[in-house]
Image (cartoon, rainbow, N blue to C red):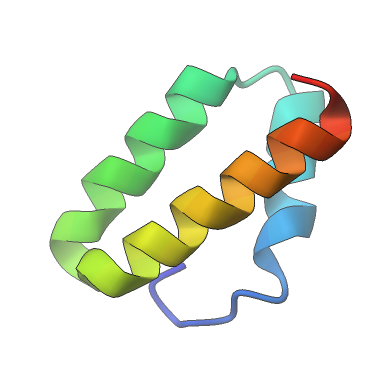
Length: 58
């Protein structure tokens, strides 16, 4: 997220979900990272998470 490599983010989000993290935990990670990475990358990551969750049926 912080490096702007948004094409890789869905893979990492799906892997995190499979490893047992919840959607709420992933949202919190994105929010916390926003303080370092900035608001635009965080909003992109949140949008990507929303897409991944809809594809996963959550």
